[in-house]
Length: 113
Length: 115
Image 1 (cartoon, rainbow over the protein chains, first blue to last red):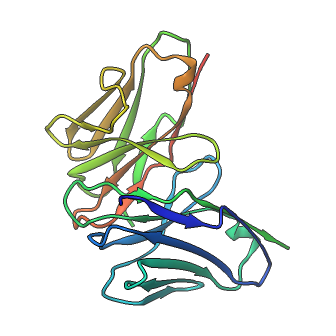
Image 2: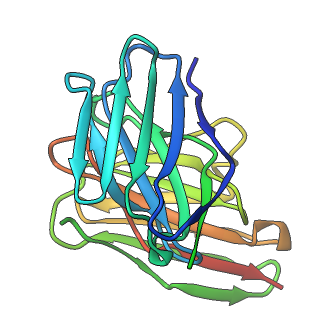
């Protein structure tokens, strides 16, 4: 019940295309859903996050869509660029002090030019 | 945004020696810090949760006597890998919770190689 399932494992997108990564969770107590971007040899960087009281959040080319009833959320990267090539992790947690993030297994995105 | 630093970024040590990794929150006070381990092409594996002034809480399967965690202040947590062996070679990453509790900010990671 603590798992976060992420798909696909890897993704190849043409420059200018839309990259879509999906995550699903079981624990209905989760109330914070961030996405992290990680480049090789670096720590993850917080990209965008959403709480379950909204169905969509957009920041620049990055959008999170959230479906509370289906317990699913997804990351959309519009106008994908080669610089977006990285590993993306979805995560979920409960907003309590000291509560760790539960991570998905990650998606390796390659944007071809 | 909040900044978390780690030192060193890379360390090579001989088998049997101990290595200390520092994690600092530079512009905010972190009541809770987390330590993760990451193998190549895998997700982050939580090792322990560290609260300032109290003992760390270790995840199942993580040897607390091998991975010593100290959270001496609201801006510093340390991970000491004792009697390191080649199988301890990995990428170690810390994170710190923002004062509001929701967001976690990650350090740049430390690459440990044990020869």
